[in-house]
Length: 128
Image (cartoon, rainbow, N blue to C red; front, side, top):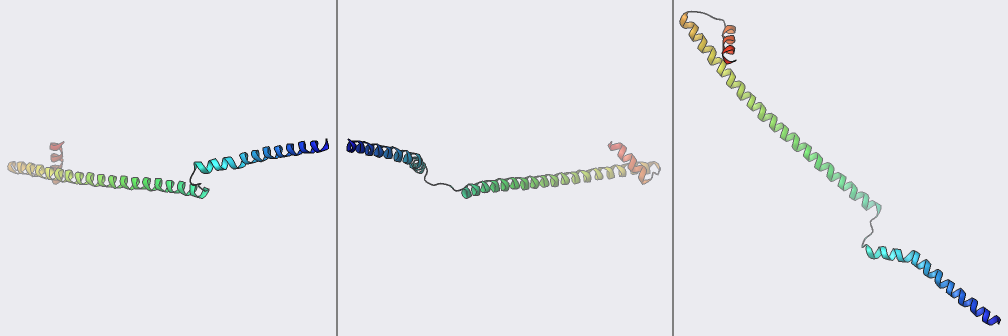
């Protein structure tokens, strides 16, 4: 009887050991094996941070390039506007001078004399 009892205890111990070892293997090894099968390379935190840093650096460079391009475009527009205003100003001065000369000639024919300021006022009045 005791021999049979020891045999049953041994079988129970072996069965329990098998169950425990399967559970340990399933809990520890199977998820790691599945993760290793699913991925070819594990990234460390340093790699992830380096990638994020590179993305931020690229974003900053693109934003800075856009700012420089906008500044160049604004400077070009300002130069164009200044050139247009200078040309228009020159045309207005030429027109005013021509009008002043015309008024001075008309007044000289009749023998009247008007000061330079008066001629300028008459020219402004004509072009207003």
